[in-house]
Image: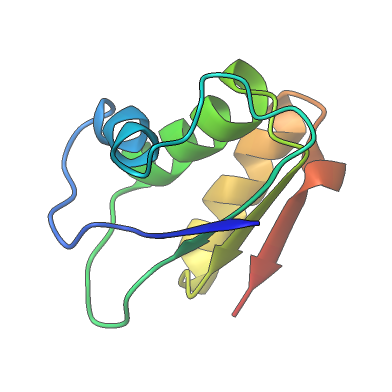
Length: 95
């Protein structure tokens, strides 16, 4: 399982792709589990979380995406993004 930390500067839909690329992750994550840790006190945007779910689960076919430390409102965003693509079974949200 790969673990990445979300960057402190969030602002743009291209950043989730850049985060995964900077972590050295391949374009195809089939069979892989990925954890992204969100730091307390950092304000993350809805677009970043939405795009991260799309990039990891839809485009890169990650088997399991674990998001740690998201606020309750951003957990809802992540859940809705996964549900929109019928992939909620592959998303794990941890306080």
